Length: 226
Image (cartoon, rainbow, N blue to C red; front, side, top):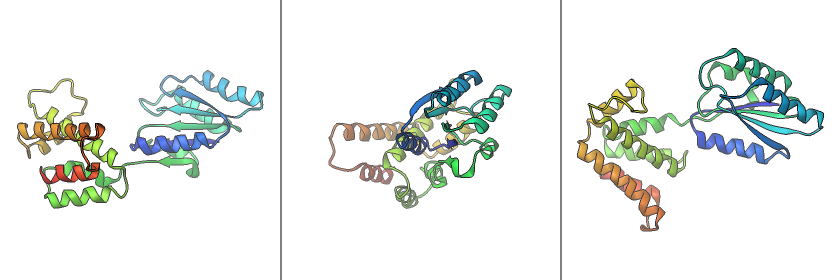
């Protein structure tokens, strides 16, 4: 059997992967999809058949990078020759047209809700009441720790891109830099720094038991005070 697990929500997709692995009485083997050779996969897959055992073979981030003939050969082999083994392709991003080659019932896509990106991009642009509404809607779908981590990342990028002279070394595409700079205009540089430090302070207080409040309550207070 062959399976695809993919999408931008890596936390959920990892949980699905572990759920499947733990539910099988089989040896697990992991391969780096960027380095995998057909001979390695063939050996792992067919050795199990010869020994009358079953394996769970996990191939990670196979679909990253450019399309190559060698990869096409590996995928074609996998689709036709999995046998009693379970071949799982796990990718940390959404796989495009190649995902259609997998059986619909074995194709699991985990993406962040669109509201999450709207929430992050509207910080500083929308009224506090709107941002709080977005936040509480997201809490119904996603863990607060994930939302908090993405808020920290958002402010880190806003702070990094606030320096108009800084162009090299940013882990962002040019359109992303422009987007963050536009959003960052809602804050002064001092405000960005203060807010970023405030988020780190929340993290520190929680990890060290220095607050009786829960994370969602602390985020509420943070958003109200923006």
